[in-house]
Length: 181
Image (cartoon, rainbow, N blue to C red):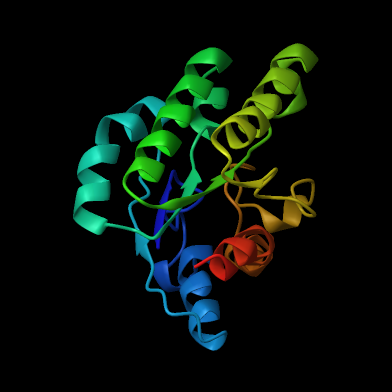
């Protein structure tokens, strides 16, 4: 299994073993799921950067499942939603062509980006998942994204105490893909 994301998946501001990705690997072992987890997440990564390196990463890791958690930095930079959507779609298509099932993880933007941008941004993830028939998690931070105490001082990156909540969100969307194996 390969996690392919940005700082939300790269253990930003915490020890690697405390990250949701490490907790996911522990949960897989606990559930007796025969997967190891590789993390190819890079803090600050955009969908364009992810697209540029996906082929080599897929070739190196050969995942059965790809958890794609990119797009947040595109949104924070106000990049065009259509560009992000095209990049996500291309990454999903390449992973599927390489034989991986894909879980696409959505993100939301703060309200100051405007209602129209935010709606289009959120919709892009759902549309890619539907068009590419991938697994889908609408919002990585579902259930706690508005709780300031679960975020580092930058108000962007979840704290160590939020990581189990993230892995629970991911697990709910990932479990159906595990059963398809």
